[in-house]
Amino acid sequence: MAFSIVTSSSPRLNLGTRRPILQPPIRCSVSSSVSTKFDLRPYWTTLIAEINQKLDEAIPVQYPQQIYEAMRYSVLAKGAKRAPPVMCVAACELFGGDRLAAFPTACALEMVHAASLIHDDLPCMDDDPSRRGQPSNHTIYGVDMAILAGDALFPLGFRHIVSHTPPDLVPEPRLLRVIAEIARAVGSTGMAAGQFLDLEGGPNSVEFVQEKKYGEMGECSAVCGGLLAGAGDDEIQRLRRYGRAVGVLYQVVDDVLEEKLKSEEREEEDKKKGKSYARVYGVEKAMEVAEELRAKAKGELDGFEKYGEKVLPLYSFVDYAADRGFSVGDQA
Image (cartoon, rainbow, N blue to C red; front, top):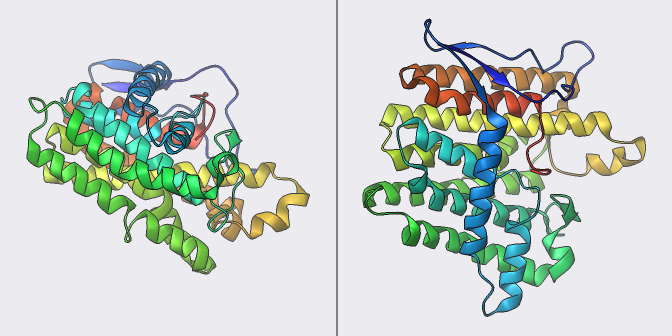
């Protein structure tokens, strides 16, 4: 079965002067007898609506009200793409898991993701005044409340997994592995290490920074979905490599787009900000890296051929990360 990615008719981005990252829809051979078209957009937007509702229910305003309002402000930001939770659900469904089993972990991943963004935006970190098309959390609620909101979201995510995952769908040992995986991803050897080197490391640390700050979230999201559904160890390792490649790919393309669109007035300011392939090595090199990451991610998915059409969402995420052929939500 061959498949093609169906996107909207909006123009495809061209990121380069010599060779664009973006290519015609890629057909991956899964079986020679059936041809299937998979449209990522309705799949993604349907999941966004379900996840948004569950996130709203998961963070009701209670005492202390100001902390909860700050938490909700970032987690429920309009236009968020919900990429980590959607990837988690897709990976779970690949192995025959029920998306109801994945939703609590998917919500937890979004809580953790939002917490990391709140902390990254702080004046002592990346010092970003805006996020997802609106003022950063600390700009609205102050640095103190932003820190507390981020601190509160991390454990809330873990508690949500334990309290809301149906025990008849996910055995306890799998849940323990999921919790351990998220803790690893956000901890001192994961995303925190990436932020440290983004602040303190030299230009040569760009690859490590990108893998840790952005690849870890993608890796963790894919792996958690597989763990929930009972994927085998070899399959988990494939998901690990796939998710990391997609996470870094998405950020590399973001960096290329930003470099191409930025004004001369911002150039000096941008050089002082976080590390990126495009900023350190130039747009052409970053484009080459993106092509390599696209090929790597798809190569890992080739090992899931036996699952047939269930692998199509994960394949299409790769092309979306590189091509941005349609709009899902408004922000990252």
